[in-house]
Length: 209
Image 1 (cartoon, rainbow, N blue to C red):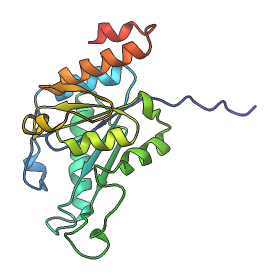
Image 2: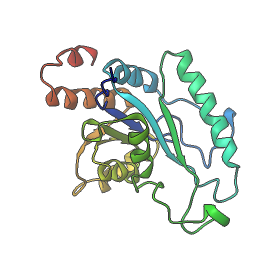
Image 3: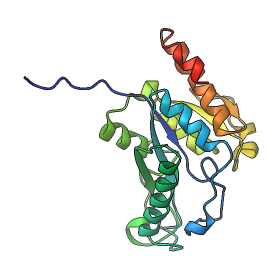
Image 4: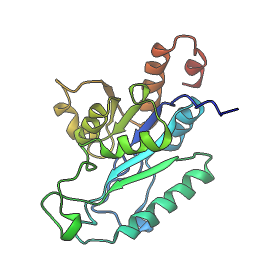
């Protein structure tokens, strides 16, 4: 008997710098990594509610020659270990190493993966069988939210990183924007309330928040 295909799952797509970890100028060293307050608790809420967690991050420092592409993997493996020690699993790490005007060779390109383009989200959705209309994008820049909106997701701004200075430019006109939150924990609660409105029978989501 053929296996029944699994139903697509909702995800929360997460920007990295300024949303999960403290903003640093072209972060390239493990020693620079600092988790932001509320990040672990917020990710736990989302994971317990059944969301797939996916990180999507622009890393133009590769194109600019500040660090090799392999170093992005080093940072992500370190973060993956840090989250795993705290009981949080990131299902996929996506990054864009390109820049449309800076860099050399194949890295200097107007690609479809650099946010605000939705390429990283669409690739993850294909690989992980994700339900984009039931998914959310969380970040500290308008470009994060535009990528989520173009992928068909709803979006949440966090006021960490560049979020507070970017907030005035978010509205009007960004389709699917739910609002802004001071921390990832508060953003997770906002997402859970929106998900509960989508599926009123899933009342356990309120208890998680």
